Image (cartoon, rainbow, N blue to C red; front, side, top):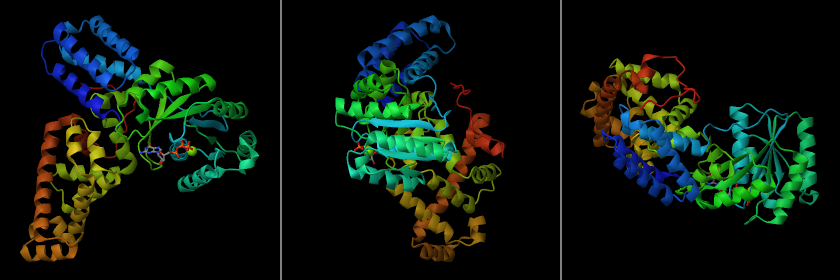
Length: 461
Ligand SMILES: Nc1nc2c(ncn2[C@@H]2O[C@H](COP(=O)(O)OP(=O)(O)OP(=O)(O)O)[C@@H](O)[C@H]2O)c(=O)[nH]1
Ligand SMILES: [Mg+2]
């Protein structure tokens, strides 16, 4: 993920100081120096860094942190809050108040305009319940229209296209008339890219802009391009008033400096991030969550949201409840394996959990998946009674199960040990976490809505 390296460095700096009982000017300066180095290494714009550190220091002094109960943690909070400000304070919503709301995608070649257009179409139709039209206005090459048609079909969204010879201006004009006539809620226009910002591209885009009068002009930038993001955003913003950025390829190991600088330098907010090639690998950009993730505080909110979306909450709550009551069975374990499989890669999940970043890097997802499949096969080969009462499993039954699942008796034994261990660990976590543990909350309040309101949320530190 983008920011991984920066995150590791910052988390280190912040951890060192938050572990100290006394805050002195000396260790504060030390931390700020490390933060500065981390930001420099991440390729953050120099003036942005200077301003950032000055703000942190000023706030810390203004809050009179030295006299506070937890001075070091206060400083960490200041750094966190300043990071949030740098990233944009609040998530920037799309303007969808028009009918149709017109969204124009622009960007350099290969930065992910077409893919993001389809991702956004899926997002708007699924999450916002909008009737969306995709428009193929990249007429630079025939393959571009074809690519959008294929993507549109895959997300179940209609694609409007015309002959290449029609020209960009006429195509967008016709598409708008069509969208109004057919009562679409949103129109997403895919446009052509170039290797570099040049006049002919800008002219073409400006002409389309004049016809479309879009509510949103979203620039796609590749996270890997670093500082260039700022330069590119700046020139696009001068020609067409940009309303937001989509940072693509966030799943790569970009250093993140461009993403951190662009808001401050250009005032254009990041609205979405692309986290993979698939059309559902696309997230709203939450500055607060990103700041927490960068500081290694984990991203519990995103995790909860992702889990809510994909997991059957009721099933997992039942599992958690049964755990607490000590009636967790292999059947429940199977349910949980299925839930985890729905959430995607294990390492991706772990990365979002506070403190588990390190662990995530040690996990091989292919191995984990294979292991999960084998575990499921083993449980599937058991009878209902056996799943409820693993004690029934004597040697002969184990042989039958091993044969049935294409595994070995040793693996069956391993799974049983793992089952007992999970049961123990979960019980311990419940006891340790008390009321603040999300798991115990889940178990305690079946049926309650666990979705936190990101605007109201306060970090407890
Ligand atoms: N890993 C990853 N790949 C992405 C992401 N977004 C786009 N891509 C890939 O990047 C490549 C280029 O994406 P396109 O959507 O065709 O880019 P474009 O800006 O439309 O390109 P042109 O139309 O040629 O200017 C494709 O292979 C996409 O699959 C992302 O968030 N993560
Ligand atoms: Mg394209």
